[in-house]
Length: 216
Image 1 (spheres, one colour):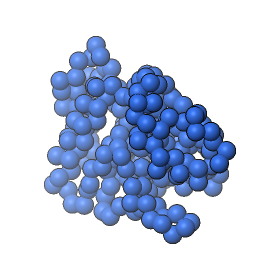
Image 2 (tube, rainbow, N blue to C red; image 1 turned 45 degrees about the vertical axis):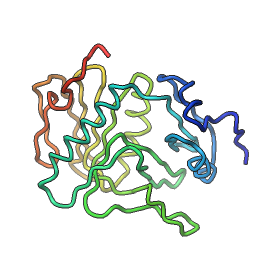
Image 3 (cartoon, helix red, strand yellow; image 1 turned 180 degrees about the horizontal axis):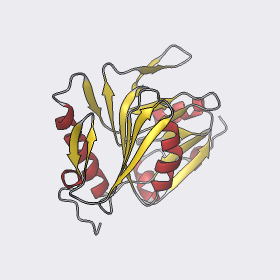
Image 4 (cartoon, rainbow, N blue to C red; image 1 turned 180 degrees about the vertical axis):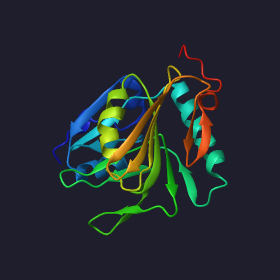
């Protein structure tokens, strides 16, 4: 294996030492990445032939993630076949040049999840390929990664209908909604009274940002 162990943190203590505003990128094959997924005590991602490791998130980041997951569960509970998924489930995007694995903060699947099957025949029930919605709560260190690498990769997912980006520092929600095979509509929402629709179900920024202090 060409990756040196000391270059990759594997324990929660080592991740904590990185702080909140750090992203590490380590060149690796996809097979090497899969080995490190088993070793790490925290989430790692894979993009552009690199293992991607992000530092710890803030209290308000996680508060928003839980809030959004709860709101989506309530929003979609009367519609058949939708499941709201947390950030421990990976999203796999097949690519001719390099496969990609991301962990969205929140995702939604319609119908049965489609799991990844490795060349060995092993099925990864921790990794799906067919989300219809993904949510990323952005931070100062991840915003370029979220709107750059992740968004471009997410748009390659045939099943995806919504990619939503939520700022943790101010009322600011960006919604990408698929309107055609290669056409996405982009809308920004910046007021607490603003609302947008998910599967024709309304959601307001005031609901999302309930009890979030913007001085965080």
